[in-house]
Image 1 (cartoon, rainbow, N blue to C red):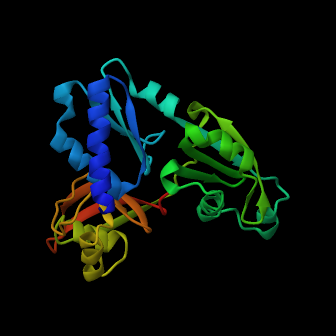
Image 2 (cartoon, helix red, strand yellow; image 1 turned 135 degrees about the vertical axis):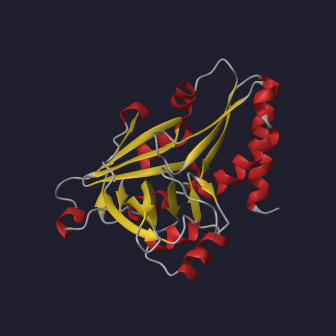
Length: 264
């Protein structure tokens, strides 16, 4: 059984458990591909007919790694988030090795340290990095273990503290304004231009399952792009189409966008 089949089965099970036992259920954290697989199964199951509400949430608006919550009618998503997720705030001193070297600890430093503790990736959500540390969203069931054992990342010693989700510090996203013109609002054209790829490489990325539009995997190179769409290219970052203008004199379409850095 491959990973997609496991996600499909787990999604169906979580919906059934919520429906049959009239209680909230949830998955572990899902990456964007896994979200797409789960969402397709949710649409097939039509849980709303049985009073089950399915919500994908990762602790803050725009989270890339999310948990699928199946909720009975008496529970709101805010309560489910508070019961299920926590934040571990890891900080290092101004005199840490990372600070002395002039290189702040990276997302990879923190993730590598967590993996070194035996923490599986599906137990953790986004890692929000700051100059002096990071806020790590994770399942509440492992929060105390991480607090007690997360003492070093890279060459820097850390202080870790469990905080409620409401205390999450969300760094301001660095965004670069961009403008381009395209022959059409096809997905491959936008990905090629915004991420500075050849049209061939853009098409290969889309067909390879690396491109997501509004957090849903899209495999068709000619899928239409609209104003307001968020397009994520795995390992390369994401863009948000802010404005689709008129045609230029040469018959091309003017597009403005914001480009953000690599994912979390």
